[in-house]
Length: 557
Image (cartoon, rainbow, N blue to C red; front, side, top):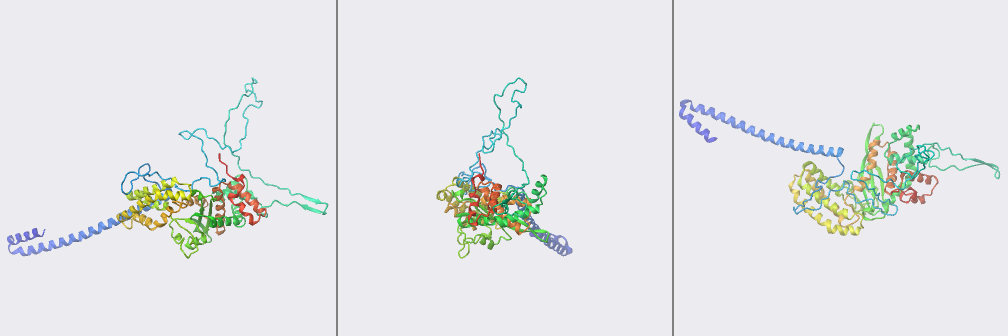
């Protein structure tokens, strides 16, 4: 362009005569202004392109956040393996490896019986391909024979023919709850020997000065913490039977039973869990609590400590203990685990970061991390951005779970040997691949954060190779939050610190009963009867759910 302008200037000077220099001067000015404007436009274009790139990045980030929140609110809670039904390529691209779709909750704690009191697996009656056909009803249920023929047991046409047999039809029936007022008559006798009136001792109750019976309290506790019915719904159910019993009254009874009668049993569960466990899981969730005088709620927390040794063939009874707290700070976690010498499997929340550190009250703890939480980072990345590297990582983790399924319920020595032979090579491939692809992604991208998460927690993630008691994930304890989360949704919030304490006590006893195959409501009624009868505290061990009488065991067909 410069050469063209020079040629044009020469032509003007040669042909324009005396006016040539002025024309050239005007041309130089026009060209200078044009070049300045072009440079300015180029700068504006660069700024616009940079602005568009920033906007596009922000839009992608917001779309990812929106997709994540949508999944949290409306999507499945389980991570889905994108390689369902396909072969998984390893990082080296060699062939297909096992990549079966992970179960929605790949738990190491299946329901195999750990001792003779555990309920066996329910064997389903054979059904046709449509899920229809005759279903066998449980054999342990009472059979009531109901005659459906003519009153005289003769042929209905009047011929006098007798019955030659029966066509049987079984249906499952229910008798609705029946409320009644028990009027117990305690006689007073005229004792001639002592020359005075002698009364009959009253039947012991937990709180004899109230009108509540042990049975109605046991029912209210089970309905709230076992069936997740809030107090106002129980009040409505009672009103449908013509019983006017205020929800506040039921709540006060429940809180009083928890903090006065059942507290020693809760402390025994806690002591058993802390002193006699080889391995436990720990996690926490939020529960809103009413803030008095402010007209709103504040965030409270519910910790869960769960023991279930069935995944490695242990014979200790399963327990879950719920501990309400106003905070989830590290000091609170250390207080709950003070003196524990066991494996405590958790997620990567920073409050668990000092478990096992020498010189602390939790130095006797081994703290593995959870593979399900790691996998979630990569499944989210694959779902939102369809990243190929994330798909490969998910496939490798799927291989780990496939190997774990083969040794579920086996003794620790067998699990350790199998993991060293089959799982360790998968981990080696995964570690190499994470190093290789770490430089391929932007530092602030979701994929880079997932890789950093894996590398930062790698030592704790691979502890399961050398200890057969460790599971891959903490899904066992996360499942224990399902009843509390459902109750949180139904009840909306906890009303007070006393209510939070009662929530923890009742939920612990109810869910531990379920884990041990014990009927909750009859068990609670029996426990309250024993406490009302002044059972010595030294004998409270026999009230623990796994020591309950056999008549409270759930029977399966």
